[in-house]
Length: 347
Image 1: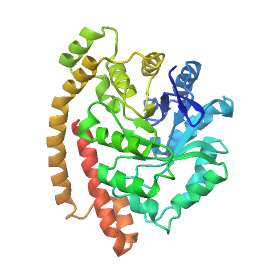
Image 2: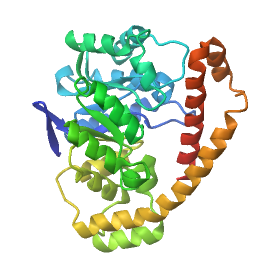
Image 3: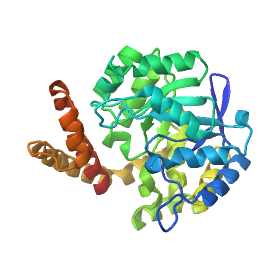
């Protein structure tokens, strides 16, 4: 296993993300298979596990917490997140945090994140009414959070504005990073910004939700000519390993085959050559052009849609209960969620 140093901790560079755990036919989590995958991961050196309040409808924390009870607490690192990115009339940071500790069956989190700090959630995280950041900093002081950071899908300007205020409080940042989003979602500029601030990079979506693990036949032919035995996913993961500042790479594995393939990729370094890195960026070009056109179209439709009242019961309840001053923020958040969902469906 490849390990990275983080403030004296020896972290496996591959982390087990629990957003896409194996499912049964009824769509419930297959806890038995998830436990077997966890066992395989730990046996091969993985020691970092990532969950969040909304994953699997709130069940991810329960399942991974129950599985990890089988292992000594000091043998693994567990990360969770506060869901300030979700649209809600109010936010109870203490209630959520205490519930998360109970669901995961632990007394502290090794890593804790503000979930998706972006243009429409920064105001929530900074709102004095909700006391989110002060409370979490207090839990860190008390040892119930060992390391505090944030994940983000923000654009570069919003990310930089947040760092200007809070870089001294944030120890790491989790971003979407892969060879498609290197330019499509300005991942290159985000990495450069985080490196300037000296903030270690945690990677999510290194294979773009599985899309870079199943490339078109023409692209596969080019890659197999250089590395016949390498999987599509291993190419994407090795590309991310090369990025300066990257400490942790999270993969949301859904079956044992994916787990074993990723474990083989992280068994030892096999750096990509300059030619191989360039080839991946060339393969990504058609996807980026299509994605940019579709994103622009989706964004235009989303802007038009805010003129129409949403029929979603959850959004309507939030809209009615929100103060007049916060309605503009809700409108923007609904628009952004629709636009993001459409973009992901296109790519």
